[in-house]
Image (cartoon, rainbow, N blue to C red):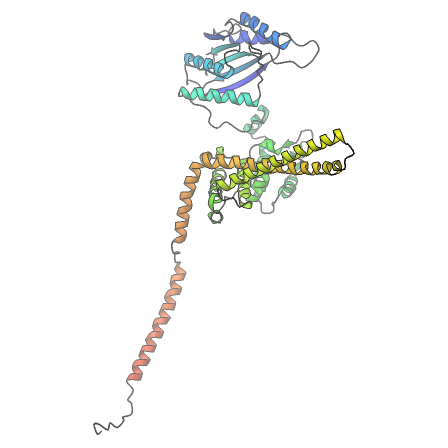
Length: 470
């Protein structure tokens, strides 16, 4: 599988170029390509330096004399593959295609594929400025873009990628090592939180805080929840959201309220229309995460919380279809636009009056009216933003992400409803009770029959028949 890493180079671009081209290594680097620059370290350094200094207005090497913040002079990217997964030739071809796709045709880049390790990897030395003066800035967005492009190219070559990268990037090497050795207090904190949440007496965040304090933790709650063991006096408390998925303040509240129990089918059946579809999706996601199914890592507590909020929203607003939701979105947008136009017209009236007659009495009414319109507009814009956000999530999930989940969930719900329609199974005690009642009825009927037979056999008094003369 291919991974992409990044390192910012601020003080020694020549050293990097010499390293990746093999001048400072024992083993020769056979695969080197210069894009818009030379393949030789010294020449590439001079060419990149001319470009950099013409746009950055500072030297390409060394530190700043004024003691100011150092600028990034070069970006060092590394693309690595698993052991034995790829040949050096193919890795180099993929690397060149990746560099051209990410940076275009105007950047100076030295691409060098190394084979001195068990895993084949490629180094990229990228000038911070392109030939047309465009400044490349590395951040989370551009790094994600680099990785996505790498994954796409690698898949085209039928090679593996990391489909589900780890979400928690907050652990240092020391913390990782402590977790491996079983000495991490943060890992113990996670275990204690997981255990305390499931206790019956923990019904909200304040209850959880009390229980953590009883377990020997120092807890503070402001915008975030920060925790540390009391015995670590010189250590900084950790924000729970940095412990990983499910430990942020909102996620903890969601976990406490739901206690890791998925929504029952009886609750799902209380909804109708699109609300039921959405409730089914939420139930499936809960099962995936709570029961740790095969692909449970694709679901987060944050996602469950957002889904629950959206379900509450569509229910409280009596939304039963996509068209109804869309109508609400349009109505909110029209209301916000109408208020915006009213504000614009009122401001224009005030401007005209202030130019021609500042003492006009109408100004006394227009200015308070303008403030009132602004308050209404702020509220309308907030409502528009909220409903639009819910609607986008709603459409994305129901029409793409949840299509397969919904189909499976509907099948399970149909099976459940079919089971409800079947007559209930009779317990053994019920059978015994019914047999007893039946037996009593049989005995009573038999007694009644015998009594009737006995009455028929009784000799009746004879009466005189005139016709027969007897």
